[in-house]
Amino acid sequence: MSVSSLKGGVGKTSVTMGLASAALQQGVRTLVVDLDPHADSTTGLAVKRGSGTEAGQLLRDAKRAKLSEHVVRSGWVDLLPEERRSTAKLDVIVGSALSATFDRPDIRPRDMRRLKTLLDGVTGYDLILVDCPPSLAGLTRIGWAASNGVLLVAEPSLFSVAGTERTMRAIRMFSNEYAPQLKSAGVVVNRARADSTEHEYRLLEMERLYKEKLMLPVLEENPFWQQIQGAAYPAHQWPGDQVRDLAKSFDQLLKQLL
Image (tube, rainbow, N blue to C red; front, side, top):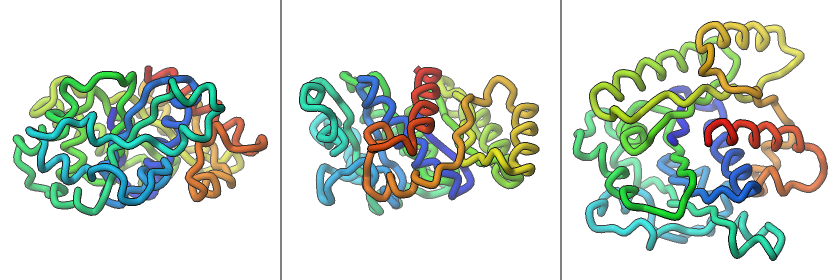
């Protein structure tokens, strides 16, 4: 499942991490592939700097590399109760700036299939999340070509709604030409504010535009979310009740995806 947005700053990586947290809590064996050159998912999933083989290098060696030898365990697993650690599985293919060498608008079709080549034959996971950069250049196309679906992340704002429409059209075109298995899995609305008239209007607009593709619940803005990410912590293990409702929302979204 590729997590995508053609507009930056909508919380795409935050949604990836929230779903990974829900998966870890529910015992869903998960691999996160960090294709974003900024590598924010890698940092947020508490992977130590210098661990593992970078995604960019693995893409270069796609025909020779064995993916299972290069995954790194997320530090989140160590935060679980001891009796659950041995069975929990949350692995990461680490991101780095090296991936940017593939982020070209003119990427060749054979290069688009590099991640698919790496993932073919990989077993032991119930879910693979691919965190894509906020563009339609090479890395996003590499992620889409390897995925069964694209989860779009949007904010309830004019520019984000327009960007999501463009992305849905791009998915249809890409699927027709390069990846017939690819579908638009749904649209997750992030950072909604219940007290905003503009957000309420945009949510109604999204319901009309996306219909059954709009996934519920909507993720409400939470002032503690940045603090949790800054601590490289899973939402479901955060002490206190500040993010309990947010964690439950990710549980429901994950259930729909699976």
